[in-house]
Image 1 (cartoon, rainbow, N blue to C red):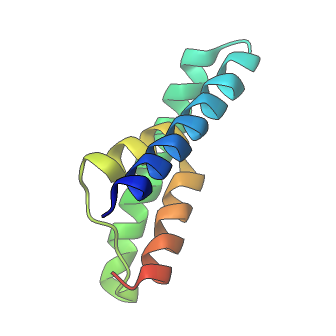
Image 2 (cartoon, rainbow, N blue to C red):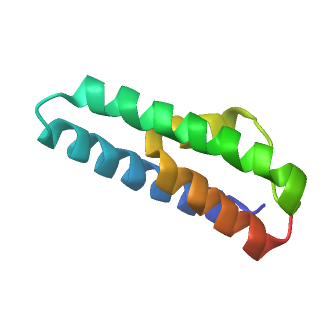
Length: 89
């Protein structure tokens, strides 16, 4: 991967992280929101991997997918599924 593409991906990741933090702190309970979103994301990842036995589509568990599911929740899992289907990985 070229350097400019890595820089672009890090900038996009930083923008998403800032947007998530702003959304969390707009609520009255940011820690509770983060924990709830993380729990939903982990459950969604588990559901996708269990359903993968029937559908053939699953997401491997690694640092990137774990953090994405915990921070972004269900939309993070859906985004990873879409990226997986687009990139045919």
